[in-house]
Image (cartoon, rainbow, N blue to C red; front, side, top):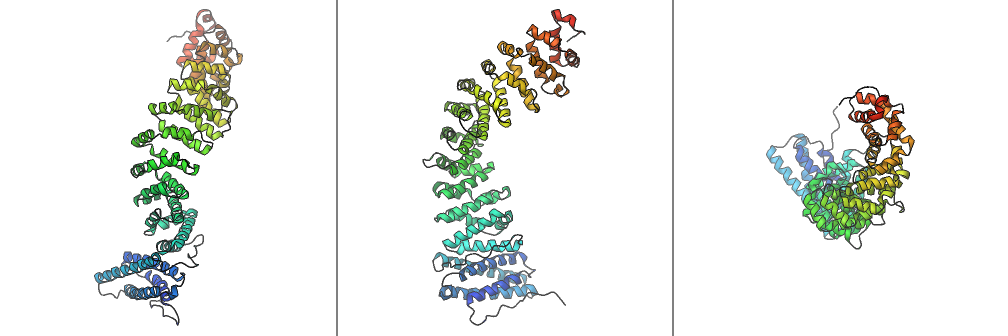
Length: 574
């Protein structure tokens, strides 16, 4: 007893069966038989793909209104039956290995493939000419969860056929169903891209005059663009040009899908030139500056532009076209999502470029950022953090910018966040304060007047090493000013805390050098010298000096001079 073999005889027509129904019966049997063919595997795979496409086309045709009474349909169905019977004969001979020669069989297979392709095109032409219009049943049932790859592939092929040969309603429904499966399951994306012509059909739909078809196709393409491994398929098929045409003349929903897709594609800098070459930069700027610009479009459009500014020539073009003024305007928007995107764009475009930073400052960027940071206004924590980072990035390399910050009350705002801010914004404010303290004596004085030093002292005990070090370094710079030193030593606890921290093992490799620097600055005051000598921590300072810590040696030397020399033991040489 052997294994069951597929039926190799064509289905026999039953009484009253239409030629269209018979063609579908033969197709089903023929597709099954084709899987048994072991020779000319690649050629038979192409034939099977075309049979499946023809099958989907005929199913759609059978569901069309009045197809049974249509003489053109019945005539084409009769021609298809002839081709299918020829194909059946070839399949049987390939299974039985009963053909006379390989070259002749290859030629016959090429002929049959051409005929099948012609039939699919003929059906498509009938839809295009309005000879066929779809009825109620539009798509085959979607495979259930865990469906095998063949079922998924058949479903996608059926959708592709309907997109190719159906009328507008059928195309729209097929796109809706395709989006549904690719959005739910990545496996469908992979299967879809393996089916010939799907990407080309989708990209052609981007130029469709039918608004809904255009919108649905951008949604599907956007899903594909979300996978790094598939982006190259889209760009290789020429997706960027039609996507930009959608930006220029598509509906708002289609533009949203297109700009989201371009944002994903331009994460790869290789695609930036292509966007620019097809006029994408101008189209994106128009979206952001138009009278009727919508946040759903402006946000992702700014995101695309931000991806493009890695190309120097594109960045210069954006500046010439007023992108900086545009983003400063958007940063004043009432919509915080747009504000955040615009501020991040400004920060990115000005990074490492002093001339652009000056343009941002000149065009009112500082005042805009200060407004976002101002505690009087009700902005989200995330928006404030982004604004603080932008201030740190843009303002501290310019003396005029620092002066503008202080004139606009930034020091008091920063003090507010250090004193009352949530942990994340508090640490960010500390980092910005540290940067500010490095800029000028005027900044150090203003920070001292605003009460920064007591707050910085509190951070010396923070759990975070980075926070402790920033606080210590900022203090070491601030106490270089006599007025700030006087403020610092007024609180007796400050000297004791510095000495205590130096004595802890934890500080031996961290902010130790800044703590020592602060103490060295403070020893210009005799009362501080006495406090240190009488503190009980001198032995620790001597150990540090003996360990060749240069600042510790300097400190001990200063404490050893004049009338304090007799109070100390040991001889120090440098």
